[in-house]
Length: 394
Ligand code: MG
Image 1 (cartoon, helix red, strand yellow):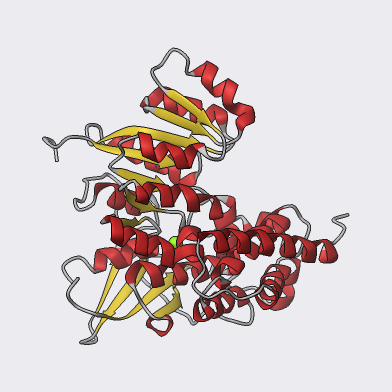
Image 2: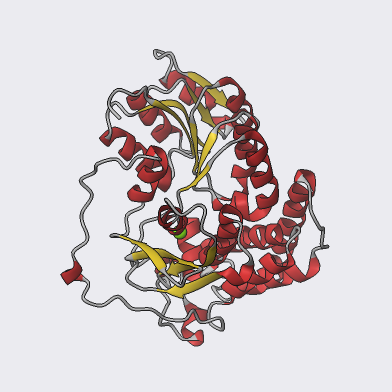
């Protein structure tokens, strides 16, 4: 790749876990990438630090309160500074990124991703919620614009890697692997009492808070089932989930002749990030290599739908379609936040989501405005339900 021009990147959500690891990849591959845009919602000091090191053409700080701080700190550099909710959506028109890494949290990634696709930018998608809430809009738009969406989620990267050279062969089924999270062996009684500190300790992966709680409830796997439906054009029965506590096999494709291909390696998000940024080429790395003898047993279990109802709720949302996956996602975002603030218990997360899915009006084939409105309605209903349930933390 040495003689090629540098690939121009925009990293949306550069101060989060995926964003920081993406910048580690960029740092370790001198000559391959240049930065067009970095963006953060609130973490102004880290954004400034990153901008001083990588000298992007522009930075966006979402929270306008931090605009002056960022602008002052970068005044000696030719870095344009923007702020506010609309800035991220508008900046896709002005900058010439080859690839946009979407690494924001939750539905906030939706409109910037749509703008990036409209402007013909390829997407490295880490913000799975975008596909969960509006997969039909995003995939249709990407087809129209000839834009590629490269998965960053490790399971979907695994499927994508297994499909290399197989694009003319139909998929019979895929299996997304799940670690089972920190509560894999907890009873229902124990789950009732778990605290956020326990939920935030993931056994295998280092990730942001929201996704770590989603892993503990297995909603993360549910969101990934919906994400896979859109990325690979599958029907719900073609998407299986298998618990694999060692997180070495990252996912599996089964073809029509019964053959299965799996992608494996040590659990490290830098690998799928680097694969998406470097695609179609694999970039040489010094990441730690897998040693078979450190893992003499790779084991597999059926996910338990009684203790982890979020996975079942996600399949239900996928079957129903329309705006229901958006309801699922919105209620989950609000419930996870409430759990992180010690306002509700762990098992109330799926209760609140289930109730919202029952109560919000169904819309078939929703447009973007329907999605945004569903999101607002589901968030406010979830908040009401939490008010009713909220326990006094003392
Ligand atoms: Mg994943």
